[in-house]
Image (cartoon, rainbow, N blue to C red; front, side, top):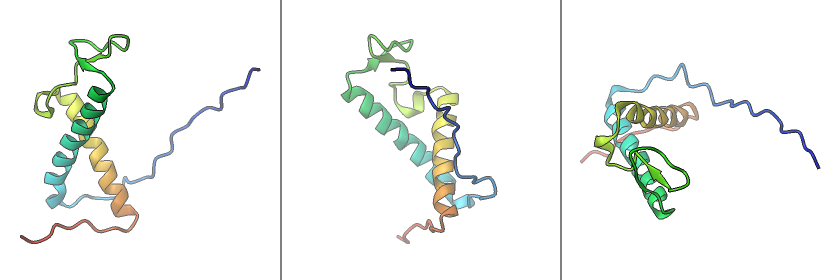
Length: 101
């Protein structure tokens, strides 16, 4: 049985025109750090450990380190995910506000 795979063409919501307010910059970094923490926790629960190079057989990954120790390009990836999530929330008409303390 030979089924042709349908070509997957990603089509994310266009958030290019959404401008994040300056007060959300802190939230972006906190979200990025948490995204990494969730990813790391999941990997560790799956049996992954730190390794200098990614090895899917040995389940080793160089990014199993605290967020602060990640290479900048990895932090940028997590930040971009956070920014796009916040922009999508705003595009869908939701408001993001912080409770006054």
